[in-house]
Image 1 (cartoon, rainbow, N blue to C red):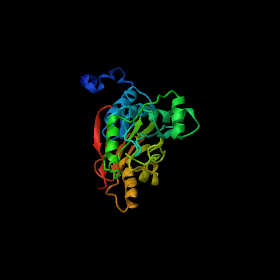
Image 2: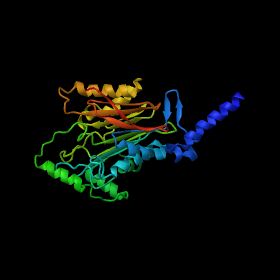
Image 3: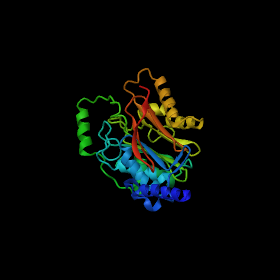
Image 4: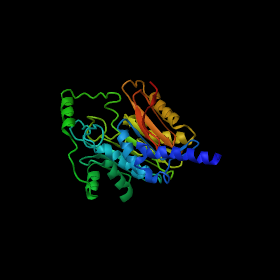
Length: 329
């Protein structure tokens, strides 16, 4: 009798799960790809920077929720944001440099230390896919400028004018004064970084950006730099960065965060230590924002930033939510 009650209770719980709106799409695969949660281990899971991470995570989850690879998820997830002309920080519609040219940077890294990147790429909506092509179709890691564009076109990508009317109007307004002073959590978070752990326990990450608004032409930040804007170590975890790229590069930020996790630090603590390292080497951080986001091999995650305002999106089988990162100031 006890066994029968237990069976009925379990069946009721499973039935409720399958009927919930969030899981209906995946009900055919729910038993095969059910999220693994044992102690502190949770997978699959995807996390990404800023509010635009919500739709990006949703696209990534279409792959992860079906048992797909983290690498495919982190590419397809950020492509959604690259293709959004209303997003002024990534892909088409990104804010131009001070010469009115939209240049894009991106990188991608998988569980086998394979990585690819492009920098100062023009006229291509999806730099993240070009970065993956660099990883998979060349012996190189980073292609830049005209060479990156030539490579993209040779691999079937189409040229597109990335400067939208909205971005052009904002740029022309800026030209009247031509003064560059980043606004915390607005103009200097021109990035989406995404980290994923798939059902097989493999990690991958991606990062894509149009860089600082009205930067010097040719400027490249941390986003396409492996070890700075993104780093993945499948034995330990993955990390990405957002904010003032020059400061992230100076401390090899994402690599530092991963190494701190290797030493046993929780992802949030690892991010905090990296942020404090940046603060310690700057006399004034009042106009400087940097945030780190990290995910370890067990599915634990965390973020930390210099100033309040940095947030990130998290999606698992059970929920899709935004998290406000803790901050030093």
